[in-house]
Image 1 (tube, rainbow, N blue to C red):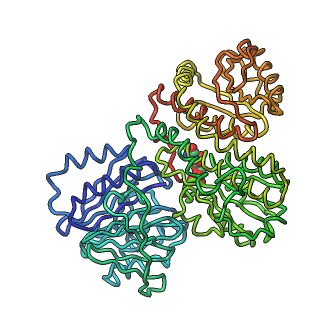
Image 2: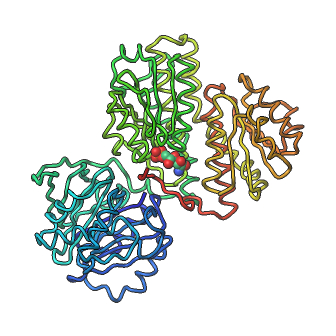
Image 3: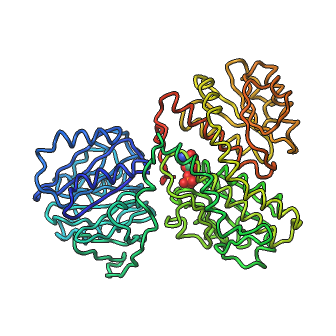
Length: 615
Ligand code: AGP
């Protein structure tokens, strides 16, 4: 949520800031702003709505900007206070000399605000962030040293933050700090960058230093000093980022979502690479740092996640229980953190998160760790906060995902669960060699099957056009594909704003059937040969009897299906146990094409942000 970029150096500062914000736009997009030090004057430009508004404003104001060597920028996803210009960052103190941008939430901002108002500070916004600006400015008045002011001010803040601050009287300097919110420094020649995420500066440098909680960095074009929370000068490790700027381009696709859907066959090949080398060899998962004896005797796993990652967790539960007999509980992180759980030092807790920054999941895994559990994180961002808290880490290797709607990262999460479940089964000896070989053989075939679906996407596009104008949508499935139904509905909701719901097909007759009539499309996921095929067919017939408009997603060749279903989306044959990886992709395409047909903002749907860093 929200994005930060800062720059000190000789480039066109406005361009660096705006380009940086563009690359962070997937993190939030309610409003945006920048502040620059222009020959000793702090100038601030803000706009509500998408970044294009800020770009246009800066174009208009171009002539008033003279010689800028430093600046900070922010793109906001509103939490405290609506998306207004006053609430947009950067925020300043009463005299306008100190300016800052902030990601996160200041929990004690109300008390601080009251205190600061009594001390004469004039507030202009409803944000928690403005409190920090006034607080740091008061401290600056005592010390006339920006780093010291930040150091003193931080002692009074409670909550999560990534902050970049500038002061009129200390030009060409950014002071940056973080706690429970990501922030890193990009290192250049006579220039340096600060950002909440890598895309903001990857075009200019691949050398970076990650800040840890409590660190303060004093960044100038030619130098960076790091201090810990006790004000000791510290040394930090420089890392070489394994990213290519090309990963941030749409490569000719109309939207990132479509590009990312198409990347899935290669993502799977990538995930399998080195982990599933041949059907005769065991799965290699060196990342799981638990000894085999402990894994063998494991009798309880808890998986915590949110949103799409929660759906991957549901598939994870199904296959781990099926392959190993180990009891698995799945819970949304936001529920896990507010109850007395039975997690203890014998529990393996798996946190699943594309971004590795989701606040609820971070809190949940911290609680689990406090209770002594081994925490295994499955994430697409091995550089994330969650990865840092993890005892073990399975990187899902999907590559950067820009579209707010998760697609390829979900597929990669599923694959990671399959590899983990097979690995556990191998350790526990709970599956026959024949079954394992067949499973591995089928897994290796999946990329080609996905390519087949992608090559026939025109049929899904036609179906999308036919159903795009319906106001409601139901996805039904049973067993392992219940998660697929829920994820299909979530994807459609997110990008098209259609009221889509996923149900266990058997539950339809216990209530939701009341909603069915000719205005309700129902998509049934039917995997022939699976244990629930006939049952879902019966549930679909029940829906047909209420005049619902039926779509089948299936590999069945059954001619009889044409009598029940108005549209049939074909998928290649696949064993039911692996079918979530295949069946999900047409659902992604359906959601994408409906959204595109309706002219929605596919990659940046309203009210959403790519990583949700508030609880
Ligand atoms: C996915 O399409 C969603 N945007 C959202 O549900 C997401 O999966 C959820 O916020 C969890 O994010 P995470 O995987 O980064 O933790």
